[in-house]
Image 1: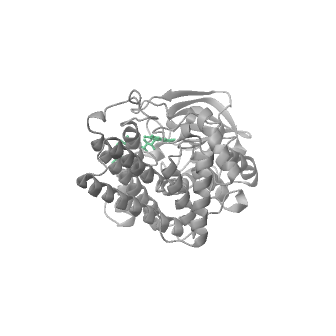
Image 2: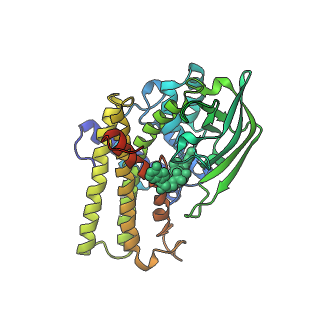
Image 3: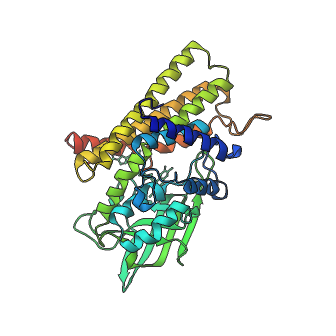
Length: 389
Ligand SMILES: Cc1cc2nc3c(=O)[nH]c(=O)nc-3n(C[C@H](O)[C@H](O)[C@H](O)COP(=O)(O)OP(=O)(O)OC[C@H]3O[C@@H](n4cnc5c(N)ncnc54)[C@H](O)[C@@H]3O)c2cc1C
């Protein structure tokens, strides 16, 4: 837990803790999965009404304008009480991007609806033939008067079947290189011609889906940036996305899970497990320190355009996600013979599912660009080693 800080930070922590204790329904605490929209969106709206849904957004756009330390305090307190996962594509990805790149109309239409939960967003980047090689996107966008007509297939779209809007990459021209001719566009998912098909994951949920577009007509005014300049816009969003994935929240939640498993299995007082828990706590603190450092420089705009910036967000993504996975690996080990249990034990208190968080955590090193690709970015673009990143 963050120890340094002002009296105001301490007061803020007390305020957050008290409000969370009073406001978060017991059935939404310590879940090992993201609840369905009907369950989680009331919680999202409660955070919005309290003014804490977008700590990292500037006040001028309706955010909290919180310092990095306050953001960590919020993450720590949410992890402490076991607050559920909320949809973050609007808050963490497209919202901040629109603040920088959106037109006045786009900002006015979308930002308030992200904040109040009326619009859930999803990301339409990946395609069956374009994952790590994202510039290989094939979904076509054909300009036609005031519209762009979209035809193609997106995949691994987190919460796509629960979202109202998607930000997507479509190919509007064949450029000299793959990175040219891509356009970043906002799609209302109620537009005719869109089919969404959920995909079941290894953890047994349907967190993501495939999205098929068949001649979907989208206003040209929904393009963000210039037509054909989508690669630049997309990678700017990815840098922000990786910093948010690097929030200590995941590692702190994993730590809470590890502590719970140790208690449940009667291992909490064993010397070896105490030592391993202490190491896990230090690892989680390291993520917090790295987040504070990277976040501070990101906010000051010292990177973002340059190569160092890309390296910082890649480094933080690797550190945060692999630390979380390591802590959950420990929790699995501590679960012992119960580790394969997929259902809460009979008569158990609350939902005790030993394997679900572990299975969920496998995704962390894949989404937002796999950690192998992040290492290639560090090697090639930051360290200047040979090879393509
Ligand atoms: C839970 C989850 C949620 C997701 N949500 C979204 C979403 O909302 N929207 C969206 O657009 N996408 C989403 N994705 C997709 C994600 O961005 C891709 O899965 C990821 O970029 C990897 O692409 P791929 O699956 O096509 O794997 P591939 O690119 O086929 O890679 C397969 C393996 O090969 C490795 N590899 C590939 N190329 C290289 C290379 N050049 N050097 C070294 N190793 C390499 C990769 O690291 C990986 O381990 C999500 C993925 C997951 C798991």
